[in-house]
Length: 288
Length: 346
Image (cartoon, rainbow over the protein chains, first blue to last red):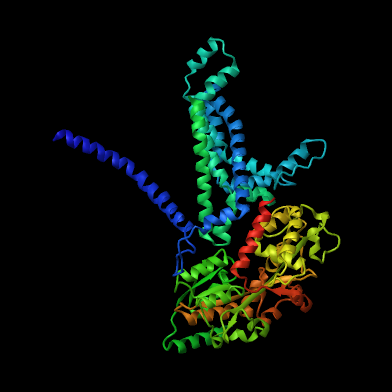
């Protein structure tokens, strides 16, 4: 039948369009993740005839060693701080880009926002290290300008970690908020203003709720990687730069205890999913 | 060297009961650690016809895993003496045929008969290089050279010291500071207390030699633990630092070259190891900054003022060194747990 062929043709088309992405996701995410899940449940890596057995010991280690919980909490707190700072800095910027300026100026400003994405993250962090360290660019620059001596040594502090991470992840929140803000009809804002709403009211009752999906998307995109961050804290944080991601990395790289590293990673994944699950109804309610 | 390698090649020919074949040997080592120097590999290929391919590891555990999982893939492997017994017990490495390594005669008995490199009367690792983990200080920060590890706990240097981010090194460093045997630590509480006191003094941990050099060059640190081989390179590159073997003692390590049990190119592997402990190779390597050679002839061939001769050639210094023995898995895990706990508390 002619109709039947058209439908199956359409379905074939859909499958052809979807399959590259889903095959890629299966190969690149699902398979390694399953392998990691498997590793997290064994006593020994099953390579080269090593004897191994299934065990929950790796997960128990997390609950038996208070260090891991301390660090996980420290990482979650870092994730929250970085996310909040990114939102506070990024949202006004996105608002200006979306609503206040037009044309070439906007293109130029947009370029500046995306610029960090063009450089390797390690390069960005090392640049910060050069700026922030004692006798570094910031220190020398301020002392050249100011008539009195200041000693700015932010390097190897939590502040340095937050600065570096905010710089790395700020574009996410700007981009997602920008898209959400642009979708707000300017007529709505005009209507509110014509009915006598002040600027704070417009922001609070209209702009923020309507752009919330963008803010939430940006927050999630930042929070999840920052909780697992280990490279930035180590380079910028020095002595105070030990986080949950650091101990996971240690297990994989230094100690070669993949099963424990995998178990710690899955606990992190579970905690992040739990936080997102708790946060999502709250955000939905705020949006309604 | 020419004569020796020809000898080795001739021996190889006899043992192989056939013509000398040019073979490709695969070497497993840390990256940039002597065996992969271009000129050294080229000279070896020129003499013997054998070519050399390298593969690298980032930790001893990774090296052991690679040996376990890829039988037949490697012909020469660098194993720290503290790990040789484990590799030998697991049957991963073969006994060395001492006859095939002529330069072995110049390795002093205390190294060649090292209890970790030998098992059941057989040699399982040819002593190659050794060195110390002690500390180095920034000469601009001190008027008088420190001689004790206590300088790390001196409040005058608060926030200006660094140790490596490594559980074993941290614990053994504290063992030396508390006057304990690094291979038989009896008082872990003293170690924990000593390290807890040390933490606020630390500016940052260092990970690699490159890190270390950068922190020192930027003037961030007054004093930091360091490896002797790296110190010789840092000094050679012009950093204002000086290496100290503290009066309390220092941690010594010995690296050996072994041949995997599964290697199919034993003769070429022996020839390569022989070249690696050859004084001719070592003297040239020492120019670029090398750890101390296990070959006494090689050490003697160094110029009078060479770092490895000046600092490590002093018998009084050597007497203070505690050589690292194998560390059991339980101890290793206990050290790591302690180190992570201390770091997490910061």
